[in-house]
Structure formats: C-alpha cells, structure tokens
Length: 122
Image (tube, rainbow, N blue to C red; front, side, top):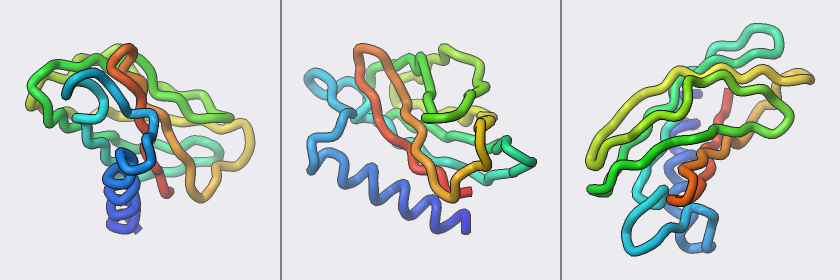
C-alpha cells in the first residue's frame, strides 16, 4: 500500500505543472522545485501519523509555513526551513473530526513561494 501511495503522489506532482496547479512561483524559485512524499501511515481512532519527506531541487531555501488538511487538525512544528538542494523528513499528526477518509490531500504552504498538494493514502 505504501508503494501505491508513493506512485500516486509522484504522478500527481508530475502532472501539476501541466494543469497550471497552485505550485507556481517566480523565475525558477518556490514550491514548484519541491518534491513531497508521504511516508508510512499509522492510524489510531481518528488520528493518522505519517512522515512527509521534502526534497528541494532548487538552489534557493524555502520555508514551509503551513500544512493544511480540510476537516482536520494538523500537528507539525512549523515553520521549517528547507535548504536549497536539501532534504528533510517531518513527522505529522492529523486528527479528523470524523473517521479518517481512505485518501486525502494535504496542502503544503510555502508562503510567497507557492503551495502544492500532497496525496496521502492511509
């Protein structure tokens, strides 16, 4: 199941520029240079815990200022700085008000550098 999650997330991130998605920024900077991957998911009642690995393919550092999931409370120590040509893995906890869905989208917000989706499949 984890491999399917990675494959779908990678496909969506590859298709995003073709459809003019929200991960746009100026002149080669910003969230469009970031690859995001959801790691293994652990579930208990209405809470999901997983990791998000961010890889910055650009030379400019970026700051993740928010990670939002509709209908849920996200616990993540923010903001975090992602260095140019760097990678980091962040632990995320998402608590839903209703039973967690089978698939959901988290929105990564890099402020003025743009936003991008991350598909999570528990």
